[in-house]
Length: 201
Image 1 (cartoon, rainbow, N blue to C red):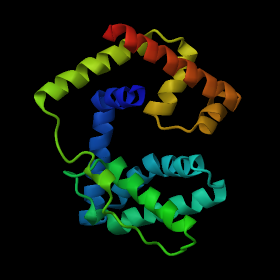
Image 2 (cartoon, rainbow, N blue to C red; image 1 turned 180 degrees about the vertical axis):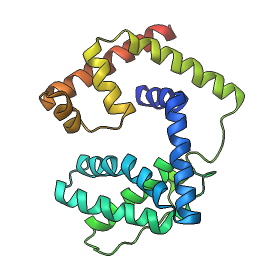
Image 3 (tube, helix red, strand yellow; image 1 turned 90 degrees about the horizontal axis):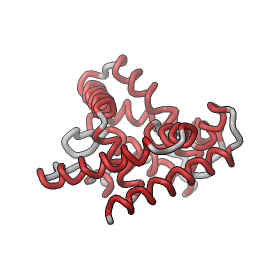
Image 4 (cartoon, rainbow, N blue to C red; image 1 turned 30 degrees about the vertical axis):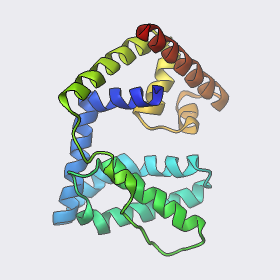
């Protein structure tokens, strides 16, 4: 429930919405016009996140780096298959990343990506008006809960859930032991869950 609320708040954030639209426009431009500037912007935003995602799944850094480069190459080659009405850019991209990882783990070195993935259906329909009201209310509860967190907990939670940084990357960025980062995130989530439950009573 807590992860879902965090995603809801992120989706309602104007800055996040603007960023998503920019990445959507980039993919369309790459697919239609082989726009190198659009690709550079897309690459700059997502390449590090893809590498962190792969390392978070247990891959060595060198392998994650190699696969992230392959995945971004797939983006360049296959962007015309992206349908902005069917999936968010991140959904489309991380579907490619998951499938490329699976392909690698099966011992298959060639690039073979199947985009017919159930995750692509995530954004296939718009929420109803009642659902939008519910999401907005959930986001407000979440925002209040996050505002009550100590600054150090709010900081690591923001970097993890809203910036997509791995625990290791956060630890390096803040010069903290990774155990401290995990502990702060865990305590923050416990506080948020407690606050949400109290609001539901």
